[in-house]
Image (cartoon, rainbow, N blue to C red; front, side, top):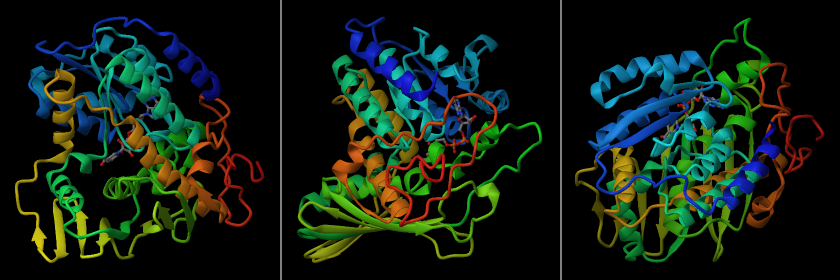
Length: 425
Ligand SMILES: NC(=O)c1ccc[n+]([C@@H]2O[C@H](COP(=O)([O-])OP(=O)(O)OC[C@H]3O[C@@H](n4cnc5c(N)ncnc54)[C@H](O)[C@@H]3O)[C@@H](O)[C@H]2O)c1
C-alpha cells in the first residue's frame, strides 16, 4: 500500500470508530504496558526514560523495520531487568510491524521513534487502536503528514487519549519558569526573537553491497527530505517550537534561504547543510532562525526573546533574563527526557489535566516545513499556503528495491510544492 492509500484508509477507519475496542488504561491499574516502534537510539533511550518515570511501566513489545536494530535495542533492555517482559513473540519486524504491535489489545501506550516520515501514519493508527502516544519530534515531513497528525490529535480528544511529543523543552523546569516570567511581562512586550541550532555534522553509515537503494536511504534517513524533513525540521524544530511557545502563535509567513556547501558528496543524499529563515509572526514580530550542520563552524543552540524592557536567553538547563530584574535560573532542573514521560503518565492516570500535544507539535513541525519550502524554492511562503499544500513526499512504494535519490533543491527554480522525486516534478 502506498502512503496516500494508507492515509485514506486510516482516516476513514478512525472516523468510523465510534466504540472503543477496549477500555484504555484505567487509573489505578498497576501496570502500564508500553510498546516501542522504532528501536534506534532515541527510541531505546525513551524506553529507559519511561521506565525511570513511573514504577508501573512495563516494556511489553518492540517493532522495527530491521531485525538488527531491534536485536540491539533488546540487548540494551537487559539493563532494565524485570521491568521488561519481551519474548520473541513480542517482537515485530518489517513494514507492517507497527500495525501488528498496535493491534495488540494489551498495549496501553506506544512510543513512536522511527524517522519522522512514518510518524503521521503511525500516530493515526495508534489513535485508531486506542493507544496513548508518546511521539518523537518532528511529527511529519510535509503538510500532508501535518494534517494527518492534527486529525489524529482531534480523534484522540474524542477518545480521551493522552499524547505527548518529544519536544522536551516544554517539560523542562527552566523553560517553564522562563515562559512564566515572559508571560508575566518581565521583559515587557515581545518585539523580536532569534533561534539557533548550529552544530557540526552527524553520523553516516557507509553503503553495503547487500543494501538496496531503499535500505541505504532508510539507514541514512537524515540526508533524505522525504524521511527526515531536512535538518531544519528534524533538529531545529525544537527551537522553533520554543519560539512559537514564547510568542503564543505560529508564523504568518516566512522568507528562507539555504544550501549545501560542506556536505555535497553522494553519501549526504540531497539535503541542505544550512538554513536561515526570517519568520513573520502576527503584529509584525520577526524571528530570525538559523541552523546548520557544518564541521569546523561555530556552534550555538538556543533561543533569545527580545522585549521592550529586556531580553530572555533560553537554552537547555539555562535561562537568563537581562531586564530591570535580572534573573538567572538556578533551581533544580530535572531531566526533561524523563519529565516528559512523567507528565504523560500522570495525564494517563488522570492525576493532571489530560495532555494532548498533537496540534501544537504539528504546528511547530509545519513552522519548520514552511521555512524549508521557502529556502528550497526561494519564494515567500505563507502559513495558509503551507498548511493547505498538497506536498506529499512519500516514495512510490514502501518496499525494498530501487529508489532514486531525489533532486537537490535549487532556489529560484524548485517549486515550493515540488516533491523533488524528479527534477521538475
Ligand atoms: N527529542 C530529542 O531530543 C531527540 C533526539 C534524537 C532523536 N530524536 C528523534 O527521534 C526519532 C528517531 O531518531 P533516532 O536518532 O533514534 O534514529 P535511529 O536511526 O537511531 O532510529 C530509528 C529507528 O526506526 C527504525 N525504522 C525506520 N523505519 C521504520 C518503519 N517504517 N517501521 C518501523 N521502524 C522503522 C529504524 O530501523 C531505526 O531502528 C527522530 O524523529 C528524531 O528526530 C529526538
